Amino acid sequence: MKCLTLISASALLLCSVFAVAAPANFDQAKRLAQRIHAPEANSFYCDCDIRWQGKKGIPDLAGCGYQVRKNGPRASRIEWEHVVPAHHFGHQRQCWQHGGRKNCVKTDAVFRAMEADLYNLVPAIGEVNGDRSNYRFGVLPATPAQHGACPVKVDFKQQVFEPAPNVRGDIARIYFYMADKYNLSLSRAQQQLFIAWQKQDPVTETEQELNQRIQQHMGHDNPFVSGVREWNLGYRPTGYGLSAR
Image (cartoon, rainbow, N blue to C red; front, top):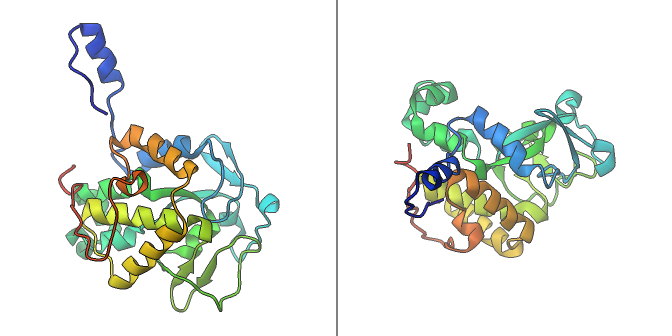
């Protein structure tokens, strides 16, 4: 958000009050994400209603037909999921080779910015977040559902996670954003999948509203949601976030 050149001291003070400050770390990002996603109050992958008690999110499992697969305690809480896993973007940083995520948080400002990027965080049922792990996204037509009415599938052997059709475009546009901003590599197969998904599941009004709310904190939008940019095979990431911190 840019402020106009103002003359009076009071106007300048008002300008500073509304200055944008992106979260500095993952903990700050989670607190902001709760406020940002509160109006929708539903989990990303399973579309279950969320009741917030302070910082704790409780999904209405019975109301959405969710069935616990294995981990009841994690299924009963909301966790903040990185759509592009920290394992994915961390492995592309030198810090990961010398101590993994813990070392990256400690030593790499760009990693901290990626970990705290609000566009990459969504509220997910904890068990689903755990089952997704750092698996790649894909389509699993022969795999049965494992979480009741929640429309996700997981192939633990092949390490593939299939999301519901109504969030596939959202996922694609988040991947495009993260890859573009932080110069992340995406395989040709990933690009082809996400290009298809973003066409099959176009931007919705809710996604646009969420984009605008996140922009108020990040200082920029997701250009693949607003339509400023479009990803095609051969797209060259700008890497504009690499010098942001």
